[in-house]
Image 1 (spheres, rainbow, N blue to C red):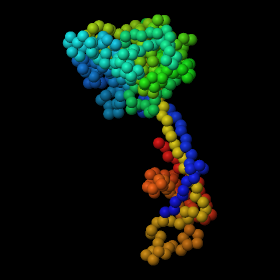
Image 2 (image 1 turned 135 degrees about the vertical axis):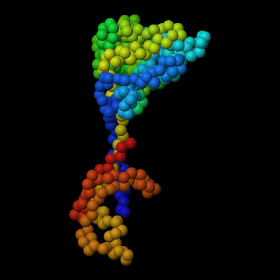
Image 3 (image 1 turned 135 degrees about the horizontal axis):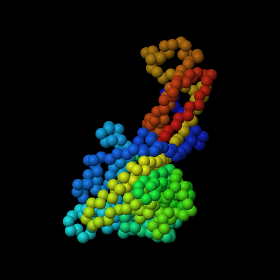
Image 4 (image 1 turned 30 degrees about the vertical axis):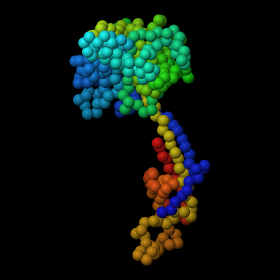
Length: 349
């Protein structure tokens, strides 16, 4: 078997591209009709999964092709709006407190920090607004590749009050202004579409801050109930002590009513191209053992003076001659002393 040594300066080229696709299953662009599972969304006890979050499916769970698209949850700093894990727990440990602590740990790495929906400019926050509670939309990890793509978020919430609230991130309007957190880039959730803010101010609601915060690198959205409540009164959280207010079902109702959720995912694909140059005097004889008899002579006289073979495969070997990759040609390439070939092998990783 003949070998070619690649010139790393001239024969090998590296390339990186970002590929954008729809986040939802089956490459559906806009998720409209959504479903839940009565088994998962069980609110029986404080320790039930449904008391913490509700999983959203693209089809009825009776279908074999149903898959989780995202989950929704409600968090409260002191644990209001949920039943306590244990009767008489003065620390307020409950599903809502667990959710709030989980996401501030993800974002800040500190369970003493709180979400501030004021204007973020790097580490500086102006017009500070820190509510005690949050709504959460967490995109299922299997639905996106490297990250969600900023500027593609379009979420409609519907309910009492203004009727419909169209939310997006402000990544296009505020290009290059993302704050950096433990969860990656952080953008504001604002009224508008496709990354463009509607109006002039990041602060969408006076004294309540923006509608939320968007973390595309970690795949979740934190919504600000205080700001949304000014537009959609049916999303006003219940904050009773030791009571299962099931506030995340209110967000579910608003998303169902809005009937439109679009967000794209982004994947970085690195490619390496190997330009395999086959010169006229190379690779003109077959290595197939059936062409040679027991004495080592060619069985076919036509292969002696003017041989003709076909290239079908290119194998890539490392420095220790281990076969590490195989490229198959779409159709065989005829080769003899009068022909040369340039085969481009693409390796994605």
